[in-house]
Image: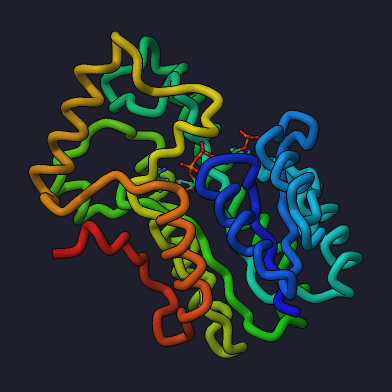
Amino acid sequence: MPSFAVIGASRGVGLELVRQLSASAANTVIVTVRNKEKSTHLNELVQASKSKNIHIVEANVADHHALERAAAEAAQITGGSLDVLVHNAARMEAENMIKGFLDYDTPEKLDAEFLASFKVNVLGVVHTVNAFLPLLRRGTTKKIIIIGSEGGDCGLVWKMRLSNAAAYGTTKAAENMVATKYAAELESEGFTVVSVSPGMVDVSGTATSSVVSPETMPTVTKIMNGIFAAFPKAAMITPEESGRRLVSFFDSVGPAESGVFRPSMEYLD
Ligand SMILES: NC(=O)c1ccc[n+]([C@@H]2O[C@H](COP(=O)([O-])OP(=O)(O)OC[C@H]3O[C@@H](n4cnc5c(N)ncnc54)[C@H](OP(=O)(O)O)[C@@H]3O)[C@@H](O)[C@H]2O)c1
């Protein structure tokens, strides 16, 4: 009876992971969301699920007390253990997502966005892992998967000359370091801790807002041109395709791959 907790999965890649993981009736899938009532796509999935193995728990990853309560609820559901923790939540607010360091109206707005991003994309991961660690220690596979991004890999960002998405990229880079630190901390206990990219995924089908508008179109085009110039094989994939790759990765990844960010395969030459 493998158990999974997918953190921050009301929509997008996380929602698809829940769909695919819950398709196997033997799996127990705990999903955390900020607001259960507003998680309409997830609620539809739960309604349609034949296996009844999806358990929704509320937690904002910026609130460590909420994460502790979520872990306690998860323990009630599983009997105290957890096999695989998947941290998916990320701050990707359309308004600031593509801004570079020079694009904020005021230094105060820059500070606010960076601090909010750090709280979710970095400390959110740390508090999630800390809250669920006692359950994972009692689990069978001891896997912690953090959904990372090429946008947080210095070498890849340089290759793409990607100056945009500064708050997102800087905090996703720090998130990779969080994975590496936990990998080192937990190696002797047999844990696998890894940050992995889902690929360039079209999540517009479940999005609550879009970075693409007439005003942002030139910037979005510049970003996409930079990606394709650096990685000609890069391609937009569906959530289904991304989910298939990730679920297979969760299954195969082991301690030998711990501690290192894994970019999506379509970026690799
Ligand atoms: N899509 C891509 O092309 C791509 C590429 C590289 C990496 N990634 C990574 O893949 C992951 C998923 O991205 P996505 O494209 O699926 O994004 P998305 O559609 O915007 O979904 C983001 C999810 O994070 C949740 N979330 C945001 N802030 C949260 C918070 N404070 N506490 C709890 N949950 C929170 C959102 O919940 P609400 O509904 O409550 O807002 C939502 O479920 C992210 O880690 C992202 O960095 C995505």
